Length: 278
Image (tube, rainbow, N blue to C red):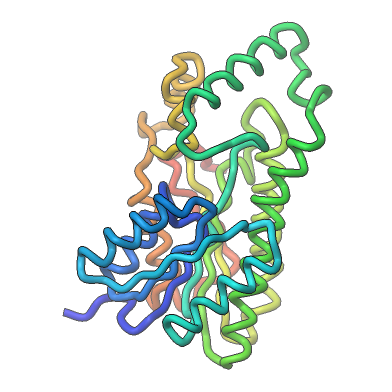
């Protein structure tokens, strides 16, 4: 039985773990050749080996998503290995400027420090926001998405072929949540960038859509799940009463890059358990 992405080539930024890896594995299972691009080589190569062991084709390239040169090299690597680019998911992202995937102890320490600061000054997340932290979050989440979109869309345009790009925004793109403004502002920017790119590229055969996940079981939310105060807040705001899984997000991404969504562009879909219903 033919897969939904047979003969397609997919590029996944942030593909070493979490939502990115789930997309890479899901797309491969549907027949796509996959280029995984990530800052972390060890889990990136592990993701590639997992796909190959399952019978798929995958390659890894190291990517600093905030670097224009690195994004251009990523797109060139996709063409070198597989000849083209048909689908893209921009899943690389950080929750704060000091975020390091998998370092839960450091995340818990930052959560505790933020709580102490807000206890002393309820406006601390805004008035005491470190500008280097702000810039890093926007560099990775927003500028990184722009650079990946530019590099991959340029290949599609040069080859004069249709394609589909999926950006990973967040419920924070439409709901400011709580705490530092850096993350929600970056994701709101991703959503507006998606709409702008969709308008620009639709006449040229390239669709661009966004996914706005709720709280998903990833490295990024692992620390929050260990702090009762925050986890209870998440569950209380999620009518389905649980966090989502990376595969549930990958399934939405699969729909958006497949021909099943051929008349869909400029949309933001929220797989969030009912968090955002406005």
